[in-house]
Image (cartoon, rainbow, N blue to C red):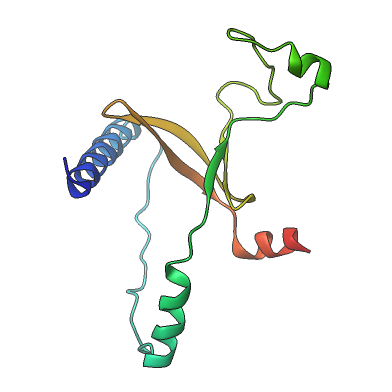
Length: 135
């Protein structure tokens, strides 16, 4: 299976879930359609800007999902073995943290598509909030 087939499976699964969520919501509260302005490309990117953008687009980053954290003593850490349970600081069902290079960028929930785990972003941290956390 190629990468495009995998993306098609994800797209199909996401569309199926959206349809299911829409069907659940039909009997509920009134929904109003928001009128949005069409996005336009008023100022095309110059060749110099494109070159600068291309420079950073290939920089590798590490994305990780954090289920929770725990602090334990070294004594307890050394006693861990197969089957041990470590209690985390989160309640079951609470959103996961999505980190890029160790910086929180979003919250999400686990999804399973074709027997593979994925994460659906439920709340993306705004750029302003991320900048504030850097200081």
